[in-house]
Image 1: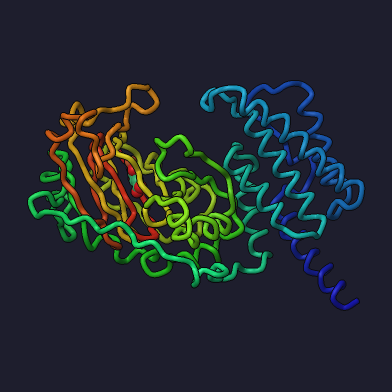
Image 2 (image 1 turned 135 degrees about the vertical axis):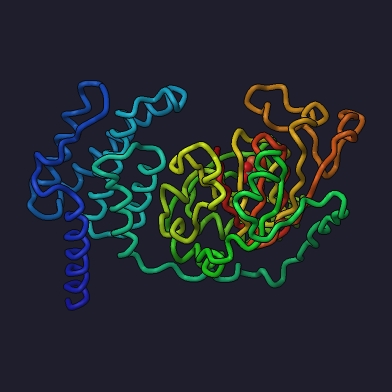
Length: 422
Ligand SMILES: O=C(O)CCC(=O)C(=O)O
Ligand SMILES: [Fe+2]
């Protein structure tokens, strides 16, 4: 009895915190949308709102079941709209309906007093695929839910890993001094601007991120602890040009246990040096602000003309052997290495014709050449392309000028953060 009473009290505390995120009165939750949706949708939203406020406490029993179902219907209906057109053409109102579907579903789960992982997943889906509603309530709700989850455990070694045959990693490339990207320690803004930004020359900057909290805090275990239960977008496949490459949503814990901890096993079975990678999608920014607090925007970005809010921050977390094929991006880039090492090869945009970009529009920014094993019969001019290379070490930041071609291979389990700026 005592235990049940304790659980009820804990559930009550959770509901009180959840409820405090929502307006006090039913009409104050306006359900405003930024555009038109089909006329059957607003009554569904209002019905869900009435169920939420009607009980005076957490919806229970039939009210909870009805709220959960309405959440399902709102998500299913808007999901079809989200997938019926290219992403940029999907109306914001439909993404808001999807977010409301996630919100009502997550609230029904939280009210039910059961495990909270499904509610966390719904919040993440809404954050990833929906548009912000009620002053970004899903981000605030997931923080509350996470605080009530048991804190993630450091990962255990995979069962039987000690007996498995380990594959030797491919050798670390040797870089000739004449091909090495220059290194600079904390240059002044002017020196960087005049010698690297204006002439568009790559450089490795040292000493500029040593004070970032991520440098001491972040590790695979730390991610399991702060974000293990969070659903994030992941890219699976050794390189995005491969046929079997795909994107998937999965929890950080699942990604780590399947693709980071077991990566040597993969390498052994598949006899390939490279294994799956995580995503460049903005989950760091949107979903897990705890991690974003541990980094900052490099001061040198102020030399650009764009606004700080327009800087795109990408997180790259993957096992040893993950490859980003040779490609170019439309903005300047600071690629900051937090842990692990990366081998990076760079080619000037002036060499583009020697790099054989794919012909299709979608892969036009990607070279067809496998730079570490080029087919010189198929791509003979590749031998005329001049490259620079570096092994990016933890604490170093590589400046990649806009449109500069870059090829990246992780030499260890690696985490990098890139800042795309203009
Ligand atoms: O680190 C990687 O694998 C790729 C990084 C990259 O392409 C970028 O930051 O633009
Ligand atoms: Fe890139």
